[in-house]
Image 1 (cartoon, rainbow, N blue to C red):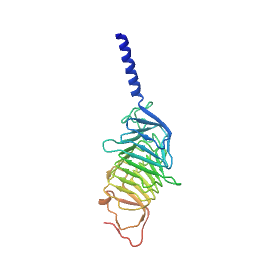
Image 2 (image 1 turned 135 degrees about the vertical axis):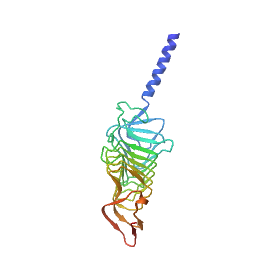
Image 3 (image 1 turned 180 degrees about the vertical axis):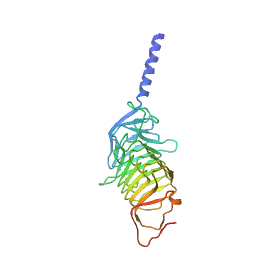
Image 4 (image 1 turned 135 degrees about the horizontal axis):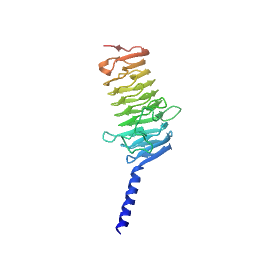
Length: 275
């Protein structure tokens, strides 16, 4: 009887141990309409896609880990709204500091371990995205950065971070992105790189990026306020494009000096003040 009880306990322990050791959920392919829960760590083994007209939502506290070369392409809507006590992580398979340890992880994450999250509003797609209390790190292998907004529909990146990319922290093309209270650190190029569009960049922190803190090329230039940081290769906001309002370009307002990196036009009947 004692032996039977012992065997039962060992079997139960083995089942519990096996389930714990394999607690991550493996995902690939189309995730349109799915809702991912914070009770799981998700391991992305193949590219993910969200179709136009559909929504992919990730619950606060969820951990998403990507295999080498994989990424997430969003033609519809991505909702990744964490909160101050329960953040969302998008990271490398080899990042053992959050979530479950993935089989095959070497515990040594590096920039470029995975691809990127792409938000596409071009060609009639929706391209809607909300990142709040999210940390996106160790991506950029495809040259776009950790996150790429392409003609996206007014996406938000708030209370979040983009770090350890093998390229830009975040890249934006023809998108009106709102960056608020977010961090951009240790990226191999600019913290933010944008072409065209109108970006709000306020109360953000830029640290040790190997380029400009923010490189804004051919954009609609507006006031950027309350930003801080240090250790960037070019510790400034690089700007070019069009100024279509009365504006003051002041380091004590932006938080960084400005560098004109290309032609900049002040439109008629507007005043540019340089203190």
